Image 1 (cartoon, rainbow, N blue to C red):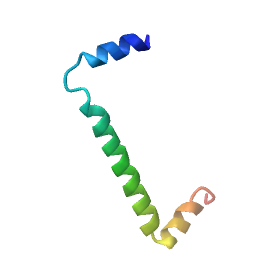
Image 2 (cartoon, rainbow, N blue to C red; image 1 turned 135 degrees about the horizontal axis):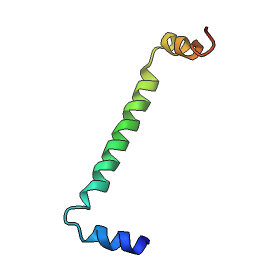
Image 3 (tube, rainbow, N blue to C red; image 1 turned 120 degrees about the vertical axis):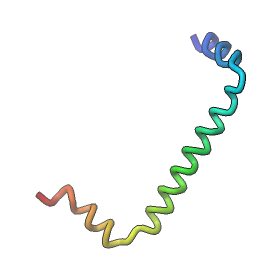
Length: 55
């Protein structure tokens, strides 16, 4: 089954750009997420962390 998929994918022209695009998208997302975590205000983090306990 994997051989069939691999052979089919190799026959598509320009397919090699999609893994690079997905890598850039995921890398950008996680870098932005880490930046947001380190720059978020501690008061906001405390407020959001208490939300599940408040009724």
